[in-house]
Length: 329
Image 1 (cartoon, rainbow, N blue to C red):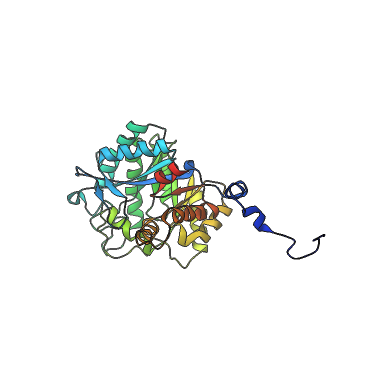
Image 2: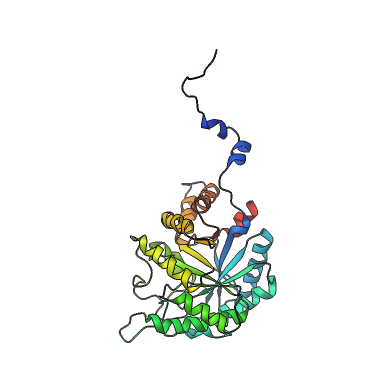
């Protein structure tokens, strides 16, 4: 008997019947080449130091960082974003360890470059917060406020020493006005025209950075609300985007990822450069904590969050699960 015209005539469930069918019609696919591993390297330690709020993540020694880079490369991960953690007695008001050619980050860049060469995209955090005794992303003025233009001079110096060490991409994360343009000029004027700038275009003043502060041994006093973006604002991020592109950004990023998928989607729709998203420490910690308590399926949650970030428009995702997920993929 004919069923033409009866309800339901359309059955979308036909395309969900088996794993093979679902795989065939999937609209969003993750790939190892889209993943970037953030990694911390700490000065003056003989063994990796676990980060209590980020189970499975450590502050690396120089040796274990090299091993982590090799593992990431072998898994097919695209890049590694390096954060340096200096010894406490090397922190000062100007963050001078950040521009010391023998500072921990510059040493780590050279280590990783010697280990993997150009087979892994080596990225570096270009910011002062790890190196200042007050924990802010720039130098302070006489009233204790972050001095934007004085900080830009420090960023220009950082760009040069990181490029001299062999980095492929610098990631200015301080949210200073004009930072991309100053860094681009500093790189070009010192013969580093081929070093790319990954602009932290929309970096929000988020509660989800908490575990990261432990990871980098932050000395932060106060907050960063005068330079990181207000979580309530959308148009502001698009203004930051247009400025970064005008100043020469090669790639742009939204950070954090999951609480700002709407921003990520708007940015991705607006540009013709690669778009990154950073699945930050608090996002990682929530999944790991819930999974440890048996409240969620860890592996499914990891893949679901990453798929959501990719679906929203990210071409690249910084995630602490990069190597693990790349192996699964």
